[in-house]
Length: 409
Image (cartoon, rainbow, N blue to C red; front, side):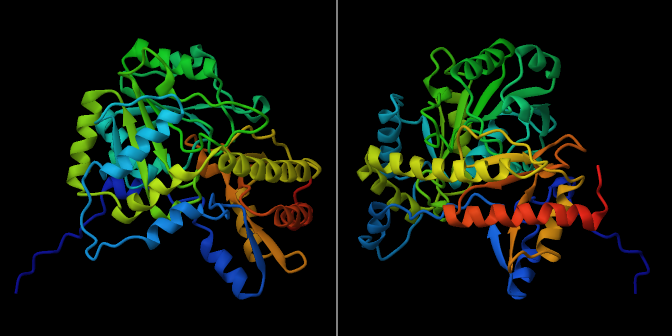
């Protein structure tokens, strides 16, 4: 028998660097609270409660296929036609090969990262940021290089001088989410053009995450990076049907670029993973039956929810937030020192009239250590009555938590 000592296998550095999701990591505590009979208001995750539009649901009932086969790697002709029509209504004309079907916006992001940068390169972005950017960057072997934005000015983009200072020889792309998750900020055309010009001047790609494009309040307008003339080589747009049509579970998105080299690279990646979801692509074209009244109704509903939550939270002593301009999230600053501990305490130790609230600690939406410790991200995806009740719970929880933790300042 060999006496040679065994060497244990080690998880890769990428695996070790994968961050836990601040959105989902507290789910076991939420499950335990529910087992105790506590009603939990989920403000932690952007899962819309609106119905997926009927024309999309109806298409599933008309499917006659008896074999659910692989779909084309770049997407079915019907789904690609749908995407061309959708962007056409936005005034954006695309050629064949400039649109790629993906498994949600998540795969589009991963493809974009891997096509635009090599392992060891950097992504220049702003924080707070969509937390899963950290996960996709780790998968691609990239580093996120963040510039801090601040709630006092609505988390809008810093001046170009700040971007210039942050640039390094390893920077390969700029990443922005507009409208923004987690801040609810809608960047102006001037801000988007400034970012695009910075990319063009430094030979960088501009990856624009536009999955919340229609979620705009108070009459605001959103500018797609695809609409900017003269930036065809720089722009890569990431898109998704998840939030737009309340269809998160079908896992269907798109990557759009006029850069032929990037499009080709992403198409080869798509071939490597075989095909995006076929049933989802069959469902999607039903959205072509939806008119302006659909989008208008969705926006009115979310704007009412935003106003309800903003008005309620603004009245709680010690809470600071700016009114979100788009998407359905915001970052709120609380009179606590550790929002991770507060979020866990809400689920494990607190109930008000048999109810509690689940929120996402904001530290997970920052790359810079130590930031976001007194902030939370809230998604306003519940009905107005539930949001009012959630505000009452938070209003009772904050002084109770401060007392329990001996916080006096």
